[in-house]
Length: 402
Figure 1 (cartoon, one colour):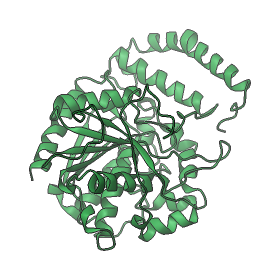
Figure 2 (cartoon, helix red, strand yellow):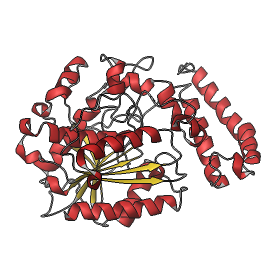
Figure 3 (tube, helix red, strand yellow):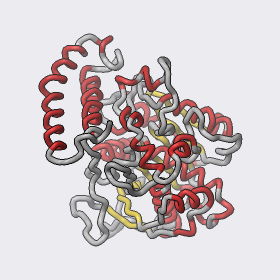
Figure 4 (cartoon, one colour):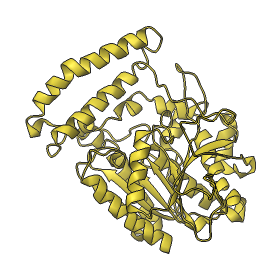
């Protein structure tokens, strides 16, 4: 059962008890246990990494017993001075076509003004969102969090770590536009922003980059981590699949970078040899799947089975409704995965399906042995993080030069 202690004062009481239990009981036990390398989540992990992943996993489990409390959505009329760099993209309802339009009607989702945060060089007067200069490259980022949590705000530690890696290994003057898309929720926490709300926001942000700021599609790299990786790929596929119905100026972006993408919301790969089983102790995201909260929050009025098998939401699922040629024309894609994450089976299946349509030359796959989920966003996963970022940077330079 999830969110059993969601109401106050039970929430605060449970949170305090959970924190004290972790700090004074479980942590000492973990430290003693992990003195033996073979008893760690991954035998090659350091004590620090083993404790970090295990403690965070316990924290996430506690969160699903109380409540998910995302940061308040930005307010255009009351910008937060502590969160600089925000810009707003105007909605374009006519860009919502095909299946996505059908799903939007079913869940009563409309296009809205959507915020995002700019990182990197600013205009001559310190402004953000300045027009693209000739040939300028840009990274269009989507954050993780299972579509129910997460943020691209400058205060977010994971965002800071990821973007500092991009700044170090990519060109230092590359701008990043990080979308702050709507987060989904469902009872018992309230119903809002079901699929395809975040997807529509992604289209809105892309139109803003191309139409309002003048970035050439060939200079836009779609990038996302975890759930954001799925969003990046789905946007690229949408721009290809509905090219004839969309304005010609939108074109097709140059590439897609997916880091630890979430591609199977029903966790359909099971059994003793499945990554869900063998990597259970080395991952911290299991409650997003076992609780089915993200699945239900995305579904809304749609059948949960649709979210569990649709190529738009679960293209890596065991029984995903994939037909030959469905991904044809999608731009070059780089997939980064950790060998110790529970979603590995779905990532590998998705890679095979994508390669079947675009060829091996269209997919660069970087699987890092022993790396945990979303390891590019944490500083304690070294040297794996730096080595992977170097490979990604090489791929990005090739894509932008093509």
